Amino acid sequence: MPASLPLRRRTCLAAAGALLVPGLRAQRTYPERPIKAVVPNAPGSSVDTIGRVATMEMAKVLGQPLVIDNRAGAAGAIGVEAVRNAAPDGYTVLVGSSSAISVAPFLQKAVTYQPLRDFDLVSLIALLPNVLVCNPQLPVQNVRDFIAYARSKNGDLRMASAGIGSVSHLAGAAFQTAAGVKALHVPYKGGSQGVASVVSGETDWVLTPAPAAMALVAGKRLKLLGHSMAPGTQPLGATPAIGSELPGFEFASWIGLMAPKGLPAGATDALVRAVAVAVQRSEVQKSFELNGAVAHASTPEEFRAYLVRDIETTRHAIAAAGVQAE
Image (cartoon, rainbow, N blue to C red; front, side, top):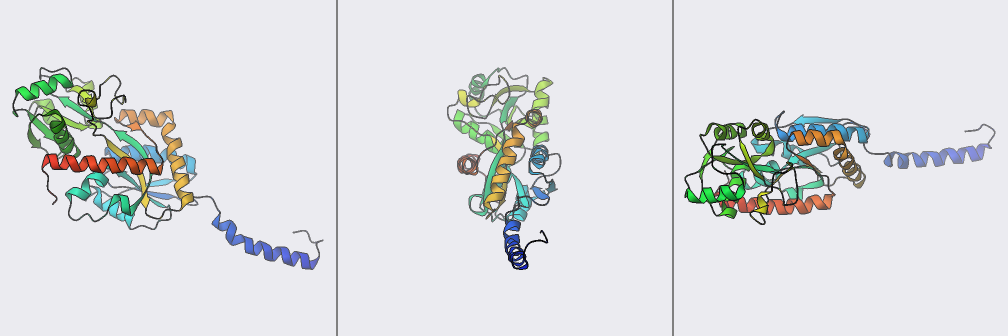
């Protein structure tokens, strides 16, 4: 402050400046420090891999690191609960997924969170198609052939899954209902074991998240028949949607950014923008594609509408699979 100002004026300006400081602090741009991004899955999983790619790019937009915190266990419920109980200040977020958010509340009695009530939905990050793959020896070339062949077998085909209540189990049950076919369900302890059983011929087919199968498809050890996203989308090049043969069929998995309920508007806006910018970058999209995912940013409202539909689809699939909560 210039020393030549009259003392009274200098005193008034100093007082005004003191009054403005709290307001200036309140208006500081979010974020001011690193953000913890909880991944409710183990390192190396599809959710972890895609979450890391997205958050690394988001950090460049936000100007602060997003530090991954893996909290695996209880089908994702441990990590989700940790975020629900965190302060809603924008410095703890959740890299949520369909298995932890749409499926777990139906199948685990110990889960008490309600996704649409207990969290702020920030943005979708990616959609992951499930793929219908079969053993290469099956005499089928497409979804129509497969449905006809499955019907002719009268329930003798064996469907693999990653376990009871897994995405591959529910997707397979939903497919059977839509196609009017039956198959013997053979659950395994994890997705890789289930897919491997189709390769070996121990089972005949599986409807599994794309990342678990695409390398084997490329090596001609599995036959790819269709994907589970909506007709008109092309997550896997020329591979057709199952819904082109079975109108209305759609069973994609998703990954999205969520936060404790009560996230400040400024933090929400900043995070939405960061996701949108990050997933538009070509290097992110290429990395997603290598993992069988499709970049898909959204507004919070679009995320909520999508989740409402996904929860209802999951509800019907669980009923079709006859799975009970444990």
